[in-house]
Length: 139
Image 1 (cartoon, helix red, strand yellow):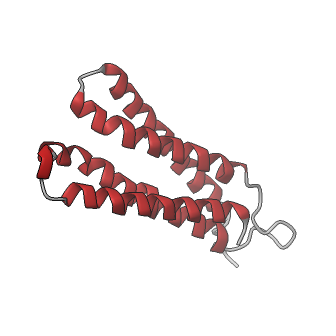
Image 2 (tube, rainbow, N blue to C red; image 1 turned 60 degrees about the vertical axis):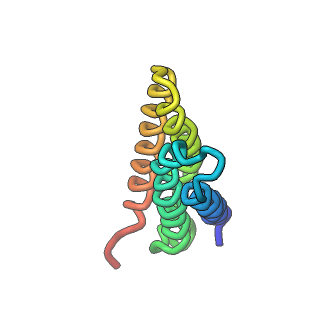
Image 3 (tube, rainbow, N blue to C red; image 1 turned 45 degrees about the horizontal axis):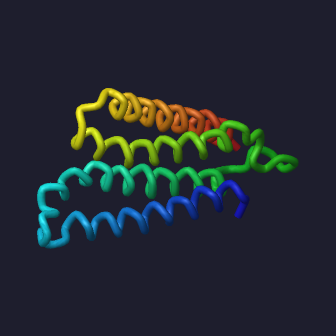
């Protein structure tokens, strides 16, 4: 398995573990006044599962298993796929921090970070689509 695929897959597994832990917190009995804060984390939990775990896992496995670019360079030019990794993860981290914070405060700063997180994730997705597009071809 290439290094980049390992990074994507291991990071995806870390996000899965974090999502499972957050899921426990969300459904935990409302002892000690936690009930009113549980719903705040629901969007972040869904995002951890769908983007942090699933999308990242798909990117890593697709990089590894999609048809080879060529015999000489099986993975082809990797700059876009490598750039997508930090963009995607910066976007995920900003999202799981800013989304709950928006419910606690009406700060424009947190809303700006949420918008930035969306832009980073969108750019990462565009980079991976552009990269993988070159590996899908006729025989």
